[in-house]
Amino acid sequence: MNHFQRALELAERGRGKTGDHPLVGAVVVRDGEVVGEGWYEYEGVRHAEVVALEQAGDAARGAVLYVTLEPCSHHGRTPPCADAVVAAGVARVVVGAHDPNPAVDGRGLERLRASGIDVELLDDFAARRQNEAWRVWKSLNRPFVTYKAAITLDERVTVPGRRWVSGEESRRRVHELRAASDAVAVGMGTVRADAPRLDARDVGAARQPRRLAFGRGPLPEGSELEQRSGPLEEELRALAAEGVQSLLLEGGPTLATSFLEAGLVDKLLLFVAPVLAGTGPPFLGDLAAPVELLHCHVEPVGKDLLVEAYLREP
Image (cartoon, rainbow, N blue to C red; front, top):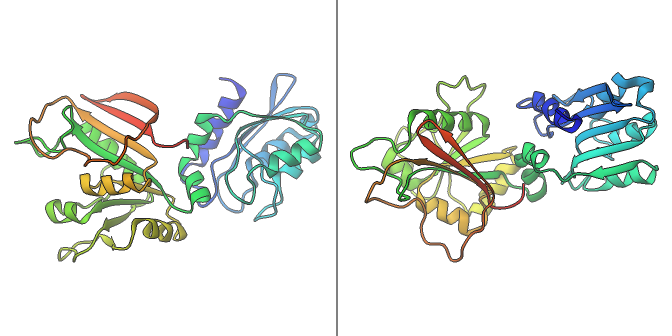
């Protein structure tokens, strides 16, 4: 494992604990030896760079700092990390990704370079992906939207005579996705047809996501879903203001097509089952124009295949 990969690994230790902060990991290396490590966990704790530099002590002077995200340059709940890096006498800084927060957005890198520090910005996909939801939330003022669907090889969302399209392993993965999301949503058509619960079950979820229904008309009696009936863009801005950074969209083709046409989907997850349905609704309606997909990845999940793709750079 190289030093930057180690920084990414350290950053993951803060997963689920950072609140409105991003995941950040840092490693200080002097003469090829690791002399300091740090990661961010929760409000009130010093940032990853500061923890790693304090661990390194005098060995930080003339060293290389590997950090997954651009060091901040502004006074927030803690002093600027860029100032701490400069004060420590670090000679070189390798940064995984720039910080899209308008309060930072390049200023941290400028602060380091202005102090004579050699700075390398990797613009690393893994580093950007690690904070994909936070990056969209900060830069676009809306949640990061993932559209998930279980489909057949002929792109249908139902299979005659079967309750489920995908297998047990895929369904468990969906519950894990719900547990990791701030909110889960469907459209009113799905609510009326299936009465979905949308909670995360049997995966040890530390918390449950908010469960939403987009659309008009009354919710069925006894429904525990939260209805959002305004324009999609406005509802997403409102959710973001309420702290919702990630939204898992599980609706049918009508809702999915509406989100895609509005340019509001960031990631696509398709659980493709090895079956031809032969009939039934497709997972998407007609789109006005083709949609290019980025960073496509395919992995087996039980007997199914999970296709992951991005609609924009994270």
